[in-house]
Amino acid sequence: MSAKARVRRIGLDVRAALRAPCGIGRVGVELARALADAAPEREILLYAASRHGRAWARPLPAELLARPNVRLFAPRLPAKALQWAARLPGVRTEWLTGRLDAFVHTDLVFVAGLRCPQIVMVHDLAFEVSRDFHDEGFHEAAATRLRRAVAHAAAIIVPSHATRADLIERWQIAPERITVIPLGGDHATRVAPGARRDPRADPTRPYALHVGTLEPRKNVVRLVRAWRAARSRGLELDLVLVGPWGWKTEALRAEIARAEMARDGAAAPVCVRGAVDEGELFAWLRDASLLCYPSLWEGFGLPIVEAFALGVPVLTSARSSTQEVAGDAALLVDPESEESITEALQRVGGDVALRADLAARGRARVAQFRWDSAARTLLRVIDSVGGG
Image 1 (cartoon, rainbow, N blue to C red):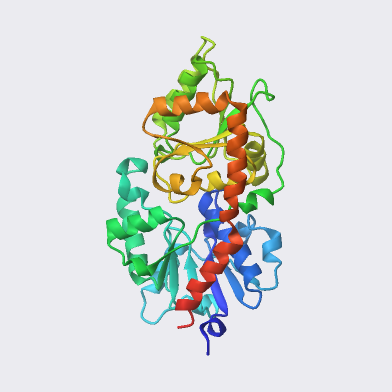
Image 2 (cartoon, helix red, strand yellow; image 1 turned 180 degrees about the vertical axis):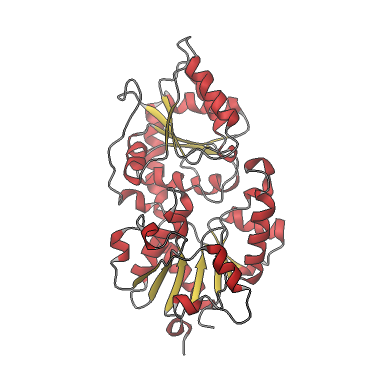
């Protein structure tokens, strides 16, 4: 019997999509959608169990749940209870889910008690790069969970060669265990943009946009400082931050307050829009003059390919996966140099031809980042290990 014939029921963790909008949640949903399209003869089980039960699964797209080969598993099942039960001899989570031939973990909180072959997605090792990126204690908890999952994984998938290199160099993972599966950006053209609820005094003004959780790794403090410097040199773009507040935000809040208090005409208040729904997010991105993504460390950088798909010029870091994903289609900066970011903002903000060239390069490059391609590669990995 062939591997493909054996692997009929595939579990996929989509719990991250039940929380506030985030990149990992997007990855789970888009992989589920693409897997269902690529393998209509197989059953895709969406693992969405939580202490809240089925009502918590409302954020999952109705059209995904309506597909004949997609099944939702969303009982009232606290993760801690499952972890406790999984320690008992012989207990297996498949008693609850039904038979699974393979399971794909997409988050840092892993489903316990599975006995089928498991594929672990490692997005990044940012917590190993710097302990300043997260709250105290996160490094130990994340490293312990992920090392345990990787050790027991039948296969490991990563979104970039940068993350693959990190796993090999930092954790000495055998290269043949790791498969690179770049994420897609084509969903950005499928989502119907909603209305921009724009609190700026003049919503018609052009703006540079940052998308992502406001946390140290995203380097937003330097971005705000660089934007203020560029404004003092004539930049005519506002700055809009879309995404939820995260952790260790004291320095960023202080920097935004300084911009708020400026009265010299060189700076205007930063527009902090916060967490928004999917429609508004893509409306902000579609209408932006520039996406600013000078992150200190990423496993991929999903907003980059989303901007490419919508024809929005991108400024990002010459570092980790962001440089790998951007290629020659973005303006690259040294993320630790405010002057580098300032000069790039001035350059792209004042050059219409450069913005048009970057937009065209991005549209061409995004063809390399498609969810159907990601699903086909993932199916090959699943078939190579599944069915046991």
